[in-house]
Image (cartoon, rainbow, N blue to C red; front, side, top):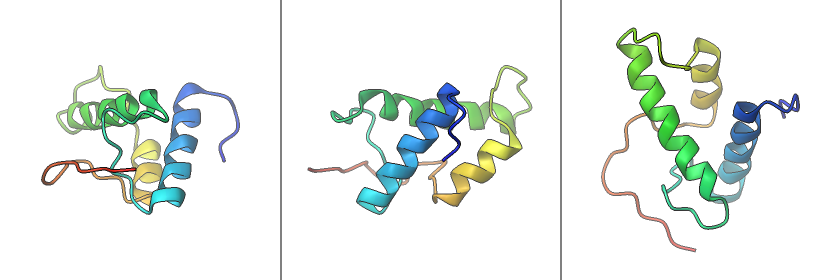
Length: 85
């Protein structure tokens, strides 16, 4: 738990909780229990793409990449995202 109250860290903590509960980090864009988490995950993928291209508008950092890799974050979604409750 990062616990310093920054929005990115709070969302990351939500992601970690999701992974503990569901066993994967494939959060659908529309995830009713936490709608902002699906949007956040999508934003991380977009920031990562920019980061790889050297785009300075990306807010992705090496540290964030390592944190997301720790939970087996999928940078590129393979196949259709299926999720059921």
